[in-house]
Length: 268
Image 1 (tube, rainbow, N blue to C red):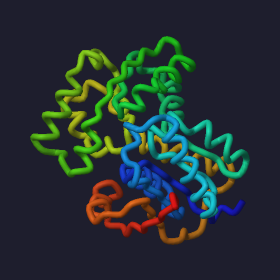
Image 2 (cartoon, rainbow, N blue to C red):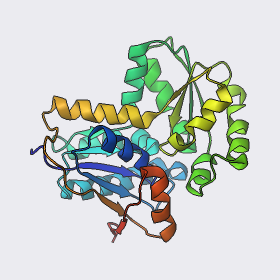
Image 3 (cartoon, rainbow, N blue to C red):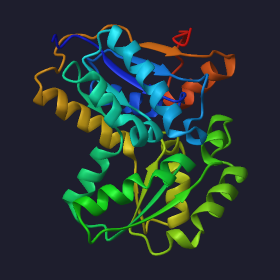
């Protein structure tokens, strides 16, 4: 496999662009091909079977684009579809999810006795973080809370204002998150409200930005496989399964710059 091939990234919508942005910053020579399943967003309220079906179709699309690695930039898809994708793709291309790198790093550090997790209903209902931490280190306690209003709030541009502060503070005041040492932002939208979350805890809780951790893991994996691109990468490509001008406008929030979205009807 050639190191000049692109990195494939997908999410239920445009929130995974936070992961794409983190990968772009740490791997500036790589070409990214991003697919946002905006026709079916959000995955957080879909059944596990539906999430698996969507994820397999998108993986096939990225495989056809000759991606050298596929990153599941969605906690819900990582929780429900990762093993199916590994089985489906076999040895064709490595698959990276957004959960395992975070769990592995925090277990290695060994300094968090009680970890809070916030995410979509589906991610929290899967109990994926608690199960993985328990398997890795039974002394780590995990307390999870579904925060379903946060992602749509962010997509509508309501953050760093009184509305977002009220919603965020209401969630974080839950008894489930009392006395935590660290908080995992288990949704790729949430890095955009990291500072507001940090302000709530006044620096007393370690806020885990999964996008940065995943980006570093992608770099490490490509180095390990000798697939790191040393030349200049081609232009990034961004696809969505449904297009509206509001999606394209919102991409600047998640990716840090204006990008052009291309409609790709993979469901036809």
